[in-house]
Every structure is written in structure tokens, then in C-alpha cells.
Image (cartoon, rainbow, N blue to C red; front, side, top):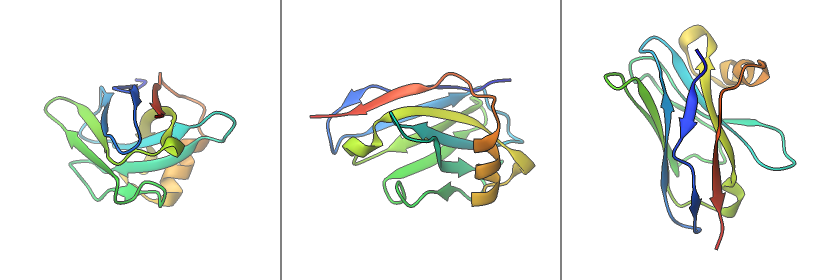
Length: 124
């Protein structure tokens, strides 16, 4: 099942957005990824099964928070203090082996199956 990201939009620097990813399973680690124009796709966050320990890339640490609602089968990415460099298409997908680490996020990044992303534009 391909996961679909939603909730993107146009915001000003310093504002917040919450992205959603569905439908997720309790058993899967879910990663968030983004691709800015002209740049390679990068892994920015991941949450393990049953609200397991999250992973954050340095570029988003302390500003973004990942969470999940296993009743709603949805994973969220709360993005605060957004910066113009956060502008990108955001994607979510299952991260293999059920755990979040830089290595498993990289493995997910290299696989070709991507669902529909959601565009985030941060601009004044």
C-alpha cells in the first residue's frame, strides 16, 4: 500500500504546518522525506511502531515533531518555525525492518516506490 501525504500549503517563515500520512499500520516504522527543487530527496524524520523512538535529521531537529495515531492509522509531522529552506515536496513511506535509524531511513530513501507527496512552500 502506498502511503499518501497531505496537509501541505503556503505559509510564511516562522509559521507552522501539520502534515498527515495515511493509511499507516501499527506495525510499521514510518518515515518522512522531502525533495526540494533541484535537490536530492532526503530523509528527515521517522517514527517506530507503537510510538517508538523517533529519528530526526539535524536540519529539522527541535522544529519538527513526528507522532502517530494508531486508531486513525495516521502519522503526523508537526512542523514549527518553518524556514524558506523547508520548501519542498514532502513524502511518507514505510521504513524497513520496523525501526528508525539513519541506516533504515537511507534504505527507504533508495527504494523506488513513492506515493503522492504534498507541497510545502515557505515564503514571505
